[in-house]
Length: 129
Image (cartoon, rainbow, N blue to C red):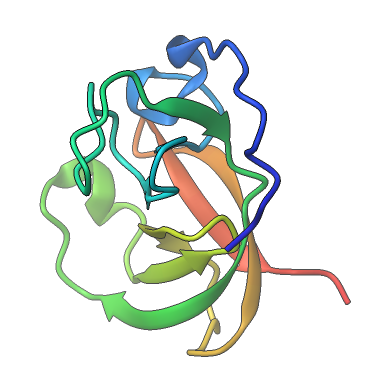
């Protein structure tokens, strides 16, 4: 787990991809140091109110990947086939997103938010080096 979140900073949640922004954001508890992905008003581990928030640097390791052959709607049908990955981010939480073709379990990746099927979504590709 990364120790870089020791200092809390004001976060503009409109920057998060779930709100149409271009960042992958997460929260963490200053009391018990639990880390989680989707926004909550309290720590899911210890119940502490007002958790801290940070912008994820986007580096992580692929833990699972699958190639999607059947799309849920017409917008995603245009992307077929596409890869969905589960990634353990260096900050200590797991995220799901689209992945570059050819990613395999164990690959080091970087995340950026891309517009896919008209929506901002996390997209992982192989890390340089």
